[in-house]
Length: 118
DNA sequence: AGCATGACGAACA
DNA sequence: GTGTTCGCCATGC
Image (tube, rainbow, N blue to C red; front, side):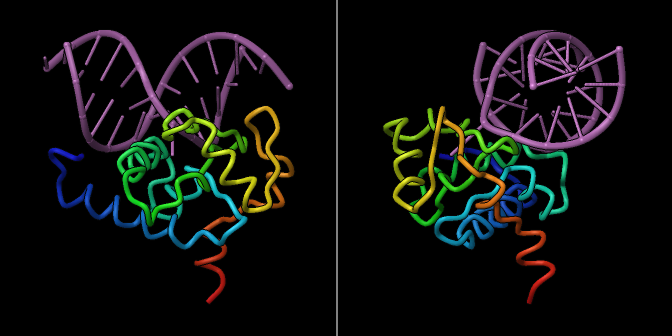
């Protein structure tokens, strides 16, 4: 539950949620990619912070968002920490040592997918 | 106000 | 490739 956010934060959150919702099934992206897409390439921490608040929203597949290394850094924040991996595996991805196998292949960059393409 | 932390990332040694 | 440091913005003490 967010106690005090400004309009600026709200806009940032809304953008993050919107991008995350647009992530195709079986694809993943990184916090940095989202922050970059929003224009704040170095505020990737805020993306993670937004995800923390987003984890209460069913429309926001936070499990499709990992760090640039393809590592499931946020798995510990899910209800069962293993849920994140399970969801990804259910979408056809393979996880090993909390890391996405062939992460580069499943990587989905909003800056490219949504910006370069119509 | 200052200090420490965080689902991160990039630069540097 | 690994370890350290800084930047980013917000939160908690």
